[in-house]
Length: 391
Image (cartoon, rainbow, N blue to C red; front, side):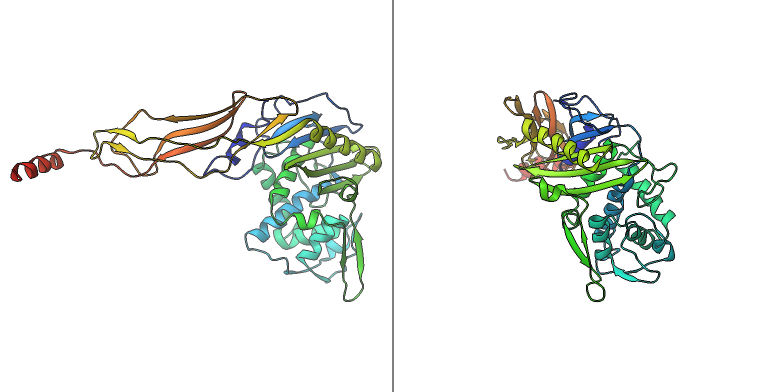
């Protein structure tokens, strides 16, 4: 089974960077293209831990995303909080621009103050455009400043078919993305430990001390689909009904995206069909044989004759398997036959890799446990002299 993007392997490698890119080389051959059909114009089903595309339909077609745009707005907000540059308790003052936003909103008034937490809840639960703009202006200094951040983050994630023009998703020329890119930013969002509280919330009340207003989620799958973690809906006349949703069952998470559906009911039925397909046909399993042993490596021209090998700590890598099949699993330890001094502590001296049906799914470096200096004439003569005078 081929993986979506080889760069995703870095998410499993020790000392590597976190998940940041799947799509820098485009979608590769999928596991089950054509095994199901949806009514939407575009869609994709992904298992994000391994980066495997289980199914796709026109996944790179550039389309208007409507409020699914807010996935990026929420992601940037949570990442700003994670860096300590913002707090959920930070009070944001709404601008005139936020008040004048159209579409779904919480009717912010100019000068009204609301915490980042409540604004995020308003974006996640009620899909509030005014709340999204208020957050954007707070974080980016202006809407345009925040949009620059959105596009920069999209590039970092490998979203090669995306261009944002605003933080809310109302129609604007040059504002587009695709199902594949939406899956990428959804994966980044659910990977953030702070996200679950927001995207998994069904009801939330704001202005409780003055004029209580209870919001109810636009994501009906939270209550109707077993294992739903959350996601984001979207609708405009131009975009049609769009949605990205994540669900988890038996330790496996799936992300399903559909774009340009004709009705909200059809959108939900298609997403359910996609997720049912994934959970019904695939399973995520950990490698059971992960014990790695390595003998010391011989050293040539060194002050000592061998160097120890350090085996890093790592969790058992997972692999995706089609139910009813028995994939070929292999663990391979490769070491340098010998090393030439000098050797630095931490120098790479080998590798352990895990493969499924011949395809590497995880790889870790093995390193030298200590430094070894090169042998020089003076220490050799000193050792001989020491032996002579001891006679």
